Length: 375
Ligand code: GAL
Image (tube, rainbow, N blue to C red; front, side, top):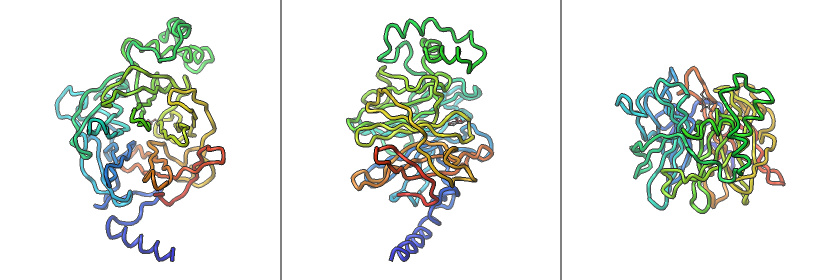
């Protein structure tokens, strides 16, 4: 019976959108083209899922098109809905074609009825120096989104629970003195808030990022800051279009990137990568009972063999996380870890990897390789 069902599913999927997607392979949309939406996220609105991601070029790595959006009723057959947020043709615009838009995440704001997009923005011709977060907004899930602004974050504000003593210690540091990184002294200064202090006036850096909407509708932005050394979690305003100014640090000096977060039974789990560019590395995991911490670091949740091209658990199976989502909360479908297997030679062909998250008896997440894409 199960076999017949499987055969029928495959036949049906072939009819609507080619073969069922497999981890480690290209994922065709209903038009037969690989899904060009990387570093992104998925939201459900009504009965439809929307997948937003970086539209990447086949050659080169700057953004020539913008953020792409796909729609699906079943998370399998994806229709390309086109460009949700387009680059600008205007010289000098923050999002001028040739800028870098990364890790776009869209949120639906139930209060305003608007779709809000946050993404990591690098200005054209400036490498990764700008380190900004950008906001865009739309009345409909497929856009077009209107670019609002890009900014550094939390200028002139200390993390909300930073004591007077900590502030004093940070103010004594001087980042310009340290040419050599990774010495114990340099790490000591970094953990004292050396980069936090350096960027206090101009605003904190924001590169790899994600967003999270809590049960009460409050949204948070989590980002790699301070030269990718420290994560910041910052509260967003009610309309999700700005920061309230309340923020905190996670793992100062821990060098975490690609943050992905979910909550289960009142516990927040944060799964990140290390910083090795497009190369896969070992994931890191943190646990907290409050979004504001304290966050406790635990071993990587990835276990076992398998993986893409022989990359086992200690290399996150060849991938880097981008988002954690659930098809149907009420139906209890699994939490799915969504990741990118980067292909820096042809970024548009970077692969997608979705793995279900399992749980140990003590609630700890565990992620094993499987080729089949979970629901
Ligand atoms: C990765 C990061 C990606 C992208 C890439 C560029 O570490 O997670 O989003 O920025 O570096 O080299």
